[in-house]
Image (tube, rainbow, N blue to C red; front, side):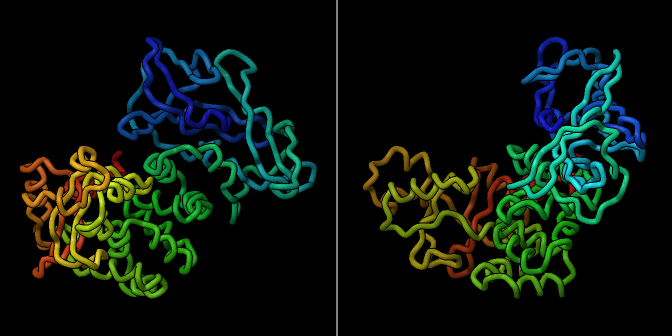
Length: 396
């Protein structure tokens, strides 16, 4: 069943309508659980329910169904369990021995009925352990609430998910399970996922982490997203985390926290691509090619006098990546900057920033202080984020 995660779902006409994210089952004590259907994610990031009775084919690369798909948002009932999200990694017993659920298998004993018939369990450590495939009735402990479940097998099933999709999956899990899965992610991955979660879920996840690890994750987040998260925490808790962070990482967050959330200063990232005027086009292209740069941030290079860490020396102008692609690699950035892009002040409201970006067809805009020093840049994705309703992530 773990192999079903991410499988494409097609309608009778052959059109792809979404991907499987989980399997809905009902536990029945010693009897094999009955499979009710699939949780299918359709665009835009909406989870709906597809009954198992509508499935006509389950193949290596696709699931095909018949009839119409109800687009009402999926809501799990109390008697239902998510097989992938909640049952993988459970600690159970096989013949009195503690084992961990590695995977589950379902089969169709009769038309229109699917049951979980087999359980793949692992005994011993992950490296030296042994995996066994046993009948459902040979395993006990599925109905017991566990304090620490782990999440290795669940994360393996969703390894290729984009951060936004993984965040959507976490949002649908019970609070306890969401915290367990988030804790199992490494710092980089968890930082990316936190940036995509609704604020309420961000606070829940961060509060479940040890303070030192929470500070490490904040250091890996984009500064503007980390600052937004800190604003949702009690002031004493936020200050405690800032003190645990590396001073060089905490300083930009402290600056961002001095601005109102819906201003250019509150939205900006303090880590755009910044280079001096004597840097070459080749150096600039090498910086924007880095994998961790988002498309909006990588669209342009900000040229300033040293120092090139925010707040920088005097801001000189912007070098757009399209212009960089047209110039010889040895050309100095000082010769290709666009001085027609006027920087904005951090006090501008989100509406004023949006109007500026729309007027000049920009994807990002520099923010400077009264001395002309670059403080950061506001990107179009952050503007859209702040203009949407506060609960847009939960709706979608």
